Image (cartoon, rainbow, N blue to C red; front, side, top):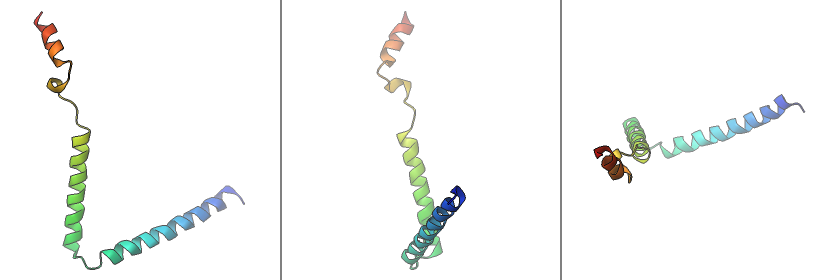
Length: 76
């Protein structure tokens, strides 16, 4: 068995799992309207972007513990 045929087996397995995932999502969302799906997607995306921005924001200079020492050194 060469590498390509081994990869083909994994590709087929992946496609089977993706198809099952698609079926699960479709069955769970069958009672929702399209605008509800779009709204939930937009709100989830905006929430994730806000959380990422909040968690990975740069520290301001004033909140840094060494800020007061830098200000004191600049006076002299």
